[in-house]
Amino acid sequence: MPVNPPQLPSLEELLASAHVVSLPMRVKFRGIMERETLLLRGPRGWGEFCPFPEYDDVESSRWLASTIEAGWLGFPPALRDSIPVNATVPAVSAERVPEVLARFGRVDAVKVKVAERGQLLADDIHRVTAVRQALPDAAIRVDANGGWDIKQAVEALRALSDLGLEYAEQPVPDIEGLAEVRRRLAAAGTPVLIAADESVRKEDDPLKVARAGAADLIVVKVAPLGGVRRALDIVAQAGLPAVVSSALDTSVGIRAGLALAAALPELPYACGLGTVSLFGSDITLDPLVADDGAIRLREAVADPGLLEQFAAPKERRDWWLERLRRVHTVLAAQRNGLFTGT
Image (cartoon, rainbow, N blue to C red; front, side, top):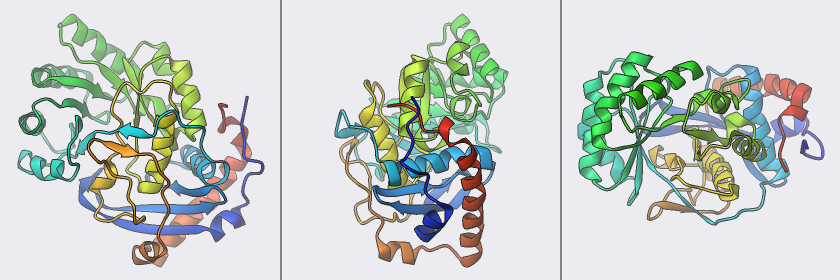
């Protein structure tokens, strides 16, 4: 049955609580060195609205639904209070891998970005090799963000499999391609599991990938799916193991990811919720970063001083507030399809 806040907050209420910040990154991630986000404070806590600029207003409405769930509805009950997380290595040179890993402390799993535009397969192999040399016993997963075609994906994953991969995330852009890569790898005897990310969160029907037999597991991100409750519903219907990940969020957004990981009946994989370590600064005095490979479940409260220190320039604040106005209109028209679960 649909579950909605008692009342969708008015645009005026959201605007009155809005803070737009621009946070520096330690390393380039998704091609950016500054991460902009809009934070909203509701009666149940803080929520984060930060769809990437290429997301249209309909896609972004799910991010706003997630923000409202966090701030106005609250999260489902937790089944665990400590969430294992992986380190994330952006598409840096192999020489920088130890520097990046050092920010995460002890970890048992690492996600390595591959298929970066302008780089070669050799760059990916060197990067993953550097991770394996630094952490011989770690579970290593690679994330291509759909950057390969089928032939490139099969070639790359056969080469990288020698380094021991836990799984490969979204090697090609579409569901049909994922199924074909999976088939070819199996035929070649290459033991690499396929995880679907964009093919879950950017599809009009996030269950298509499961019905097509295109993945061994799914990556779920709270904001793009419309909130913790909707993500829980999708995982239950998909019937596949799930990895909880983030969308380059501040601690406020990570808190929502932790809520999902804490509420899942099973949590077989370390979560991709350690990306606050990639920021030069956060907006809370108690950042949600890993300690000994896990993050302790707790609240994320934005600090007024940090909100002021990292406030975005007026033109960027205006851009985000205008986006909020448009997306609120979309959400108001379709809200009953966004808040689902129990």
